[in-house]
Length: 302
Image 1 (spheres, rainbow, N blue to C red):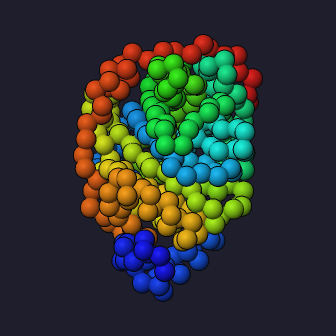
Image 2: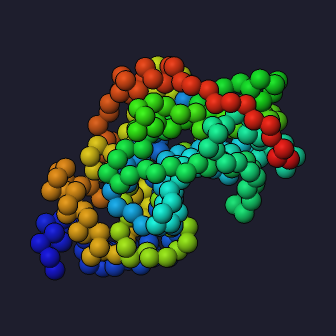
């Protein structure tokens, strides 16, 4: 047993029996989740988030936000490590009903969009996006009434760190169809780390997540409480998700703890103490009040 195992004690191993069970359970899972406590914000229409990947491998999706999962017009966004040479950001919205489909109505010239199927059906967008390990990925999603009656626009923005400006990746417009879940983020909300090919599960993956939520930009508040499954916990004032063998992750966690202080590990259904509250960074808040708009697109999706 190495020194890091001894140092973490109950926070990581929690006894050899529990550690064995935890890793066996995670080995069978495709994804680890954080389930956010919205603190009563059922009418929220603005969502700002940050993902910081600290260790990664190909075929991993780091979902920053998955809102109204399984409900009409639920959606998700985040970043993917697709291969050794390609990384992306993705943004999708499910159908409102079998006959009421979302359409991409605005998009950056680099955004690719189409219909998706498999786990439900809806409108999908992605863009090649060379995000970096240890570098914060920032995104913003906003819901507003659409140009046509009884529709909702869900607009997705990402921060371009190279050019130091926000970019409007796409707008997906959904028919409301009388469904309460279409025009807010106020239902279930989670983030996750998914190994979508189920390969190299022993190799380390680690990402930090933070989300701010509100009815408008000025009122957004940090979500300080979450519960998780798989390997999860708190570090650097954020929540984390991880996948990998115990030995591989021990080395990654040891490096993080040495640089950034104590890590706290959670178990399934655990309720950890909240992370420290903090307002939306002023520069971010100011920038979100003056966002660009991508060009309109001709959309032939059914």
